[in-house]
Image (tube, rainbow, N blue to C red; front, side):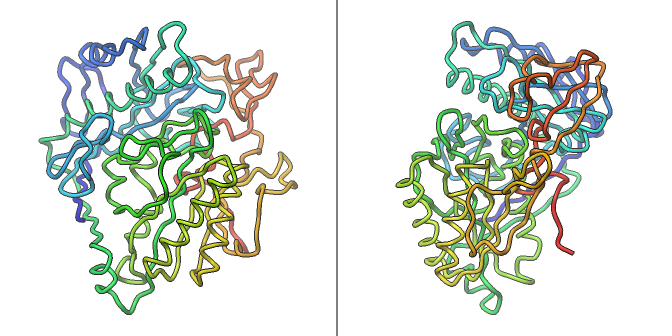
Length: 428
């Protein structure tokens, strides 16, 4: 499967009479977009704000971040199973408004939602302080249950990203990157002398409001399967969960998976990138056994020499991570695990809830329990009162002077377990 991704670099967003991209500026017709997003009966009100890197702005609670994209050629469209029909995506041409993002906020859905600061020390922990953001403030209808609230806000974000993406349909990209993975046996034969490597992509599905969707299906309901890496670039996998903000994979991160992109960089040079195995992170032991058995079976079936395994979340999913690692290692396949740590505020506690000697090659993306003080900023978008009880916050997090004291767990993307951030650990 071959996908051409055309990046249209966006350096600014402005409200205007017509939605278009011109000279690196994304112009947005605010009234038209508000009217489009207000069609959902589950949403009581919609407002839009533009925030840019360096602005003295704090956004909280952050539900999701989505990158505007448009399918220019090929099957289906962006966000199949939600806004597009359920065709297999990942081929043809897709244009991306690179540097722009949709951020959804409003009344809190669950307690595990985050903070984006556009300036100050908090901005150094989130990749979304570096994007030009259209913030969608979506307040739910009165009496809406949490799962319906989450779904409504999620769909509003997808609709906004699709609307903006359309502005890039007929724009000539500033750069084009080509990604290609061939059918399994053909791919294996192409570089027979190189080690065969794949990515085991763990998706958060740890109970109510901890949902990730694959072609519109809640990943709780899947057994592990093989997908082309390019499918995720067209929005085949999207976020629908309220896991802690620091290591949640927002939809933007799924669409720009750094592990997939990095694996492509040395494909055909140092190894043969064979594809992606997606699996889930369920609550019950029987489900964990089933999924980890299937992940190991598929890795063996693909004839792999090595895999990278990434986690989403912490605690309960640490067991899924270790089961995948242990069972795949037992097949004679080398493994590297990618995670973050919850080692206590002093860094002295056990980092993972589960461990195994097979997990001897590990990449850490930081300690989520580390405390940070975020200074008062000039403008708040959303509901600042939630900071005292979101994950990473605590009673007294919101100070009288307008500053915040939180664990970096509360910052969106701070300890990204796929490496879409700024923290890591090194062995010297």
